[in-house]
Amino acid sequence: MACLHDTPSTRLVRRRFLVTSIAAWGAYCFAVSAISGWFGWEPPKGGLGLYLAAVLPALPVGVAIFAWGRYFSELTDEFMRIVQVKAMMISTGLTMFTCTAWGFLAQY
Image (cartoon, rainbow, N blue to C red; front, side, top):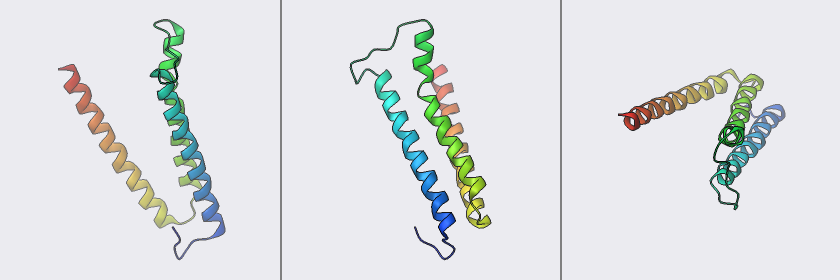
């Protein structure tokens, strides 16, 4: 995605973000597959191991959120930064709305 203001530092920032995001979401897919039993491993049925297995997919999500924050802080083009921040806020809001509605539908 080349643009008029594409500089070597901007390309480096974008590349670092993409590599971190792809690695984080790959780890997320692996973690979900592992705790779902796709690799022949069954998570513990109780105790501390169950809690650790349940939290395992959240760790790569934290890494992905960190990657977004680092990307926003290192991006030098203010216009592109605000466009990205607005897109992130809209997607976060839609996700929160959907998960809240889903949770209440499941509850009631």
